Image 1 (tube, helix red, strand yellow):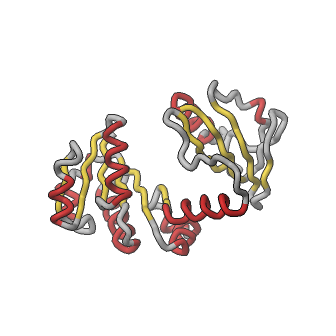
Image 2 (cartoon, one colour):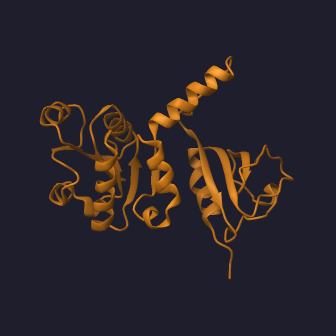
Length: 227
């Protein structure tokens, strides 16, 4: 996969290194010249000193051929504009928007007209805050915020058109090395499921699985009912 990343701060740099370590190609765009020059020796991919809200800079980063674009600076407005611009240049690109203002995240998740620009919206601040609150209110657990290498916890949405909608979990034929650990209906009610649990017509499922099973799980939960 070829990924273009905007922002070489702590988050952007760490994501770049992790992607490279997994064998992906990375181009990093950083507005600060000093930081860009310093990081040019730290990652194997191309480091561009420029502003990713400028179309010419995205073109220089080869955005038209990129599989994904992640806007990871600490400035919400710049991240938003860059994702919109990247999507306009390359409609097939996957965009990952980092937001620091939680209200922005809520708006982008709800407004349908905006969803076409942002495939995934993440807030490291919200994730850290949730982790801290849970540690304070229910101490004594060895919590894993990011699963160990080789496995992930993922969420899939279910709607009326999903092929898995209202099916029993035991009938899904989940791949080996995967497990549904939580089911939410469209009102947010939580069920810790068993094989006899019926999935809601609309809602979300949380699945824990090894990397080798995730692609098959993705196909299963994104499949639509036949007309």
